Length: 271
Image (tube, rainbow, N blue to C red; front, side, top):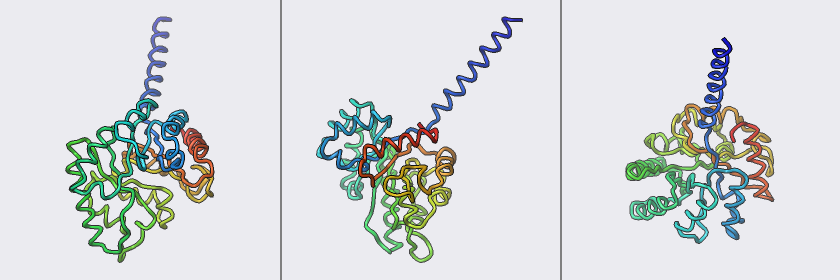
């Protein structure tokens, strides 16, 4: 009887630990957008990456390469136990004549998410549709390389052209393979609700900028006006998000800001 009880207890404990392990495995990894620490990257990229790693971030999203070759960047990532969770690559770099070089750079650094950070503002719905076609074609070409292309949200993208936002014209004309990189703060600045916008596009927010909005320049997530529980619920459910990318671009002490942001993510149970 004792043996059976012990065996049952052991099985129960084992089951519980297994559940915990599985839950941990399901956590979305957290990276940081290096624009958050752009000045530090300019003057000391190796030291900045070391600081990012020490805080606990698992990856970085590049916003420029600071004069480093792709091989040098990969070495710095490897030395600090980091991976590239994205690059903000200019619109010009995904043009057909430049795409092969862009693929080569991203293969070297180990990145599979090619995110265009911005495009020239336009009030032409047709131009947004033409851009959508380019992104669709690019997505097809990248598939063989295990990569994906996406577009990053800015406030002006939520302005209406007629009765439809530029964002909806663009994503309404792109295939599901084209990543919708939400920026929670920029979306709110554009007068839209990020949770509402994301729910229109399930499965497409494979990476998202986690950025506070409405709490002042030093506020981190949880000290602002975004409904983070709803954001996280979407990403961990219908969003099928692969990476949370923390961004904080308004602090007087950027390293401290991304450190406080990481602590806030810990309070939410995300790291």
